[in-house]
Image (cartoon, rainbow, N blue to C red; front, side, top):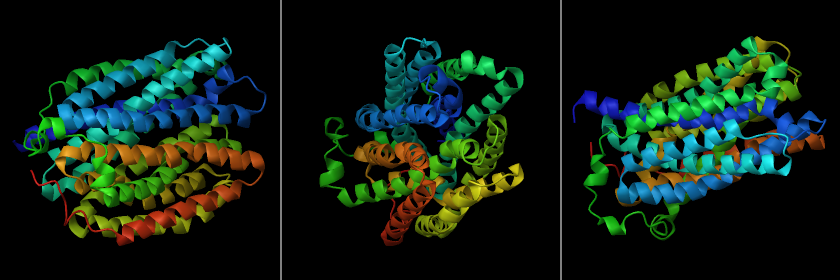
Length: 422
């Protein structure tokens, strides 16, 4: 495969990741508007908490999607799984865009069903795209290209935030509460159709086509726990730390600035837009560092620094008044976390052989995200409502510490990678 073909395939595999995460984070970004339509309680914290419960519900579906599409990717091919996942996300997004409000339980049920469908799609998307990009990248630059997977993930979230800032400029607050929140879901559904067409033209990876195991014996989920229990436990622990950190410092941070620091919604959205734009730029650079100095060293530094800054930074953000200071405080912990986010895909893929790689990347990751990442915002809001907001900050620091210990004890996957095809 020529370098140009390799680049085109990597970008094509990542493009769908951008769309899927745009759709996924559009829910988190616009929850401050549509939560009132679905949950008409007077207390804003209660409205956001109800919306966060449904957000967490989408994470419950992610392990199921990871299992189903992981098996599909290991047996039918990475490319086929990529096309199917983006088609499912398209259906979920369009469903939210047209869901009627004001029907009480029926409206809430339709919203839950749409989020569950999106959860299935994202659960399968991560495993398929992370495996595809990791297998398609050359061994000398695998960390660098792995960073681009989180570039598209963060890019999807950033695009959702930018759209929110744009709509806040052109629509009144009443219009956003009434119907403007539907716009991002309609856009996401349309973009998914384009990516579906792009993905159908991608090359299949050599790791899948040359795997020595027969097709009917590939994608057996029990092998993750019978043949690769240590690797699966490592993925769960690292994902727990990375997931709690990522969703605390991205999706929950906007609510913290509004609900605790007293920022206006447009100001908080603008701060987080600049934070995500800056965070996005770290990923390939830190991935390149891991190609030179090793995955393990990068992870240990990342989780160690994250554990140290969690409590003081989150505590300072509850009382911040200046947008520039808020930007710097939000960016610092994300810079520390980039040692994990830039390597999230490649570390998992390098741990497993090809015949269970998509499952190994997807299933333990989705389980950990369902338990930890998906409940980060809900837990933070619960601590806030109970009057013990700082308690959540210590929980975040503790989970980072566990991830740090696991990273310190694991082998360096750059030196012991099971991806042997270039």
